[in-house]
Image 1 (cartoon, rainbow, N blue to C red):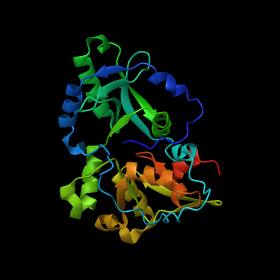
Image 2: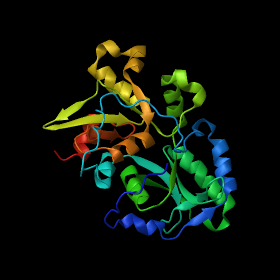
Image 3: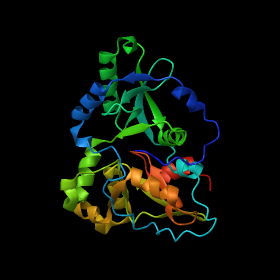
Length: 271
């Protein structure tokens, strides 16, 4: 996933983590790729398939002179609270891997702790100097986004269960696979708190199904799926970056796995 580089953010304490990197070879990247076959489509490119736009998000209007787009800070804020996992050394420096063609080094970010632990085992196996001090560390997606704005390259490893869920929802496109990190949304879940509108976006299909079962008894059971739309995190963030304020895209809020939207909004949003 490569974000266009917006204007730089204010200094970030996490930038010290990116000063020095330990590089692993392409062999490790290839091995991880084969270990996680279900998530093999997680890298994002300009030629990736376009997923349906979320219906509750209004289409951005044609650009006008000096129209204000969402700032990096505004986009990052929507990602607050969701953790992913990577591997660092004892100095909290990220362990990087080489991409398949060896052109650059990237950080691997896992949505499942067990995948990060597999990554850690491979690091300890391949790099003797890291056997005793490498460790799995969490980092929140808003922090990741801030680092990407500064030019640090990362690649996501999605939860393979959610890849499977996304492919089932997109049965007609199953042969083309799924590019990116799956995210799920429903028109039935639009939240208003005081004067603010929120559109929850979920990383787990099971979480959105649980919320839908509360708001619509008629949609319980197998009927839940017809109210769920799936897209990719990468596509949604790119659209947010290109959208104007008050276009509807600034209403999005990403809900951490296992959490309800009501609790998350209460925890992170000041309204």
